[in-house]
Amino acid sequence: MIALLVRDLRLAFRAGGGFGLGLAFFLIVTVMVPFSVGPNSDTLSLIAPGILWLGALLACLLSLDRLLALDWEDGSLDLLATAPLPLEGVLSIKALAHWLTTGLPLVLAAPVLGVLLNLPAGGYLWITLSLLIGTPALSVVGTFGAALTVGLKRGGLLLSLLVMPLYVPTLIFGAEVARRGASGMSVETPLLMLAGITLGTIALLPFASAAVLRVNLR
Amino acid sequence: MIAVRDLGVSRGGMPVLAGVQFALSSGEALVLRGPNGIGKTTLLRTLARLQPPLCGEILGDVDDIAYAAHADGLKLTLTVDENLAFWARVFGGGDPEAAIRAFDLASLRDRPAGGLSAGQKRRLSLARLMVTGRRLWILDEPTVSLDAASVQLFASTIRSHLAAGGAAIMATHIDLGIEGRVLDLAPFKAKLPAFDADDAGGFL
Image 1 (cartoon, rainbow over the protein chains, first blue to last red):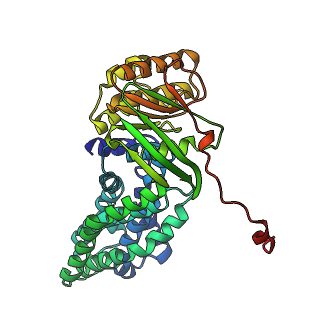
Image 2 (image 1 turned 90 degrees about the vertical axis):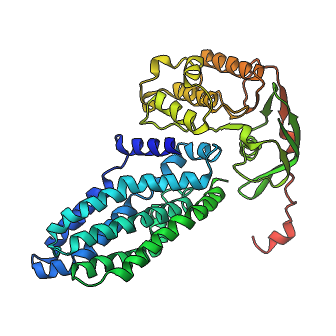
Image 3 (image 1 turned 90 degrees about the horizontal axis):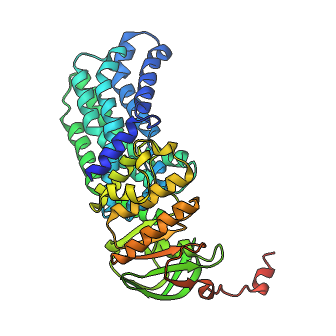
């Protein structure tokens, strides 16, 4: 298991591995928003939590089609499926590697980019915390989507369409935590919902992902 | 080590082979022959439990099996050493050094797999079998893009694997000079349901 995690991280950091793709996209979205919306700082601070969450979600989505497709193309997915690792474990590790290379950099970048969007001072803690709690769910749900579409050539479009509705609850509660935090309201309810969604997907979805991947490998 | 009774396999929902029977014990090799499209790859994937059989049963421990497909399954940005070390750790089996010696990869070990020729990649992919520590090797066209010298390396690896109590099932068209049984799959071709011209008439 650890060997697989180390391999996936190493692949991500090598040339062409895709590390930084999501981060660069996130940077572009948040830098461009003030240009398109206008420099009115009241408007920007109002939409900042939502923009940061939407940018992080889209950046995550962008990197999903590499998650299993590369392993499928070169045949290593077949070999992993016949290896002594349980497929559920393989997919959980793949989701973890995806989070470490895509989700975690977004979490760390969000407070910095919040400055560009004039995020209110109270919001920095909550945008970071809500992304930290919410992005693992994006990776796990994304792995499920990747397992569903793994055999398809150019399955990226279908993958995005399939995964998008599954991302909606995380987006709603994540952005709500950040919005309430930024305006100084109580964040307890959306924060608990967000954490519940993340824990639920981590606990259940790897089994569904492994089941659909077994069907797709036939 | 593995026994197959009245096995039927399908590809894309269409039955391709039916009634396949054989048994293989340790130290034996089985070579599958048959024309293109007869279902050699499908049979091997079924034996490796990558897809369920249509009917019949496969007896034997799935944890004995190491499968090597058409595709090499190498990560092109990792070096030869890193590729082998990964599979050795996943399977918790053999010694990468022995595999590197057996397939003459010592001079390539620090090169990224993407920089290897097709034949060298194939040698690395076959070296992977040695580090799995599994007893039954299921090989799909193992000698593709190998030159004559590498085929000899591969044949001697198979021989020592068999001598050590292993077994191998392979689909190959070339003669490796290994004493083993040959199973011609042509007689097991599944009979498709007869095409009913009258039924199709209204359709055409």
